[in-house]
Length: 473
Image (cartoon, rainbow, N blue to C red; front, side, top):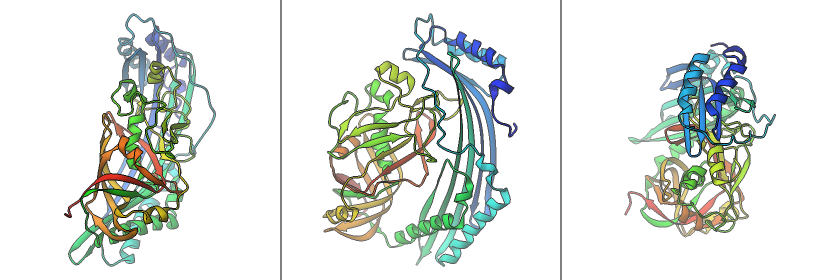
């Protein structure tokens, strides 16, 4: 594998041959494509004063899909050869059967580029990356004598894709990704607590490796860890909760976003199925999925079917107005594709997925929303969470949260979990801040065994009547 531009229809297989095989596989189908991919990635992890892991991966291959009605045939290979392509076509063709379909129109062409095409792995030498990780370790240990462990990582990747359709349309995209993460453990009087910070996006490594950038992340990770040293057991019960801006939007992503993906609604398995045009949230709640924000982790110039990404309004002033669609589900539901057909790699078929999902800001000052909280929790950091798509029920753990009584922010709390369901939570939003923020660039989303990078965001929000699971009576 070389560093030359990825052009499989020029260097690996004849374009006319590939198109002829694809047309044979999709004759009588509704849709289909050839998806070529080359991906390179590098990761360095510096843990507890030493380089723990350093890895470099490279892979390439293709996937061929033929779609007829609700059925899709898919085959993939690491070999980009005519023989492998013909074998894949025979397999994918099985989904088409006797045919009878009408090939869908091609996606709209675009020359838009939302991010650099430069390889971020080559943006800094291995030695410079390692020195940066060492500096992070030293900086944190010098910053606070309570630091007992530091873990820092740098990751960079470059994904190059080309999509060929049976009508002859060819679409290319080059997608960089970088990320820098820092975790720290502090100890005081025998008690240990941790804090994490990080971020990145479809940008080069140079900005992330500037001292001003990584020092800010290091200080934030340390701040969270030190705050948790004083945390008391979280209360338990039903109470109002204020969520901070930015990364807490992960709750919105999980509890609401997945339920607004087209496939779940077409099949009737989403809690929001059949509610188009109805009020599903409090007035003032507007939720977007936007893959067009430059340089963001969840952004894509085109999706993995070749459809340009878009700014899609899902909920407008509390009313459900849209779902996220790939080409297959959009066709079956009689609506346009929205640029949300995404796949983890050439070895996976596309499906409706989120990009950057966020709630727009309102008119309230964040401090006023907190001041209105009589008895509850102010949650500004989240860890893991899970959701049941069929009913929207979710459980999220807080990494940084505070007890609030009579509008006064009190002691940090430890062990708080938020429990509820998305449909109810949407209707119980009482306050929307004017401080909408996107997360720092650290989201990954799993669905049906596939993982893709995403972004989330929201303003400060008050949600009434969530169940808080804690350890205090």
